Length: 178
Image (tube, rainbow, N blue to C red; front, side, top):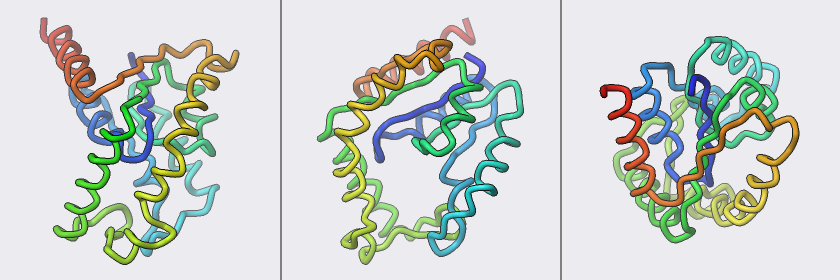
């Protein structure tokens, strides 16, 4: 595993897992949200996003997290491994709700000086609403995508619970230090 993409529904823990994986493997962690969002929750122009990503993944080793299909041609083509966080709906919903409320209360600064707020939580742009809209679609899409000929080079690691993910990460750490 030299070039890894971590995917999963919004709130599944992609960034946390990718950061831990990058740390264990001693390679850069590339967060697609950080490359994609500008201040005021504005999307950077597509050319800028793709150029930032192309530069970041030019290295020999990295871990990327994110579901951006509009740049999957870049990441998946260079990747050798996909880690799919395929957790149950209620697990993800709980994690996302807890994370969102924590970010609102602590006023955590996200990409491009953005913050989550109660206003956005209850708007049509709600991260919770986005998860509800995309959860089942992603669970259907990923197995189909993994079977495509252009993705035949990818090793797929499907993790079905946070406990299974923790065990997998611990096993990697043991292998690296053993």
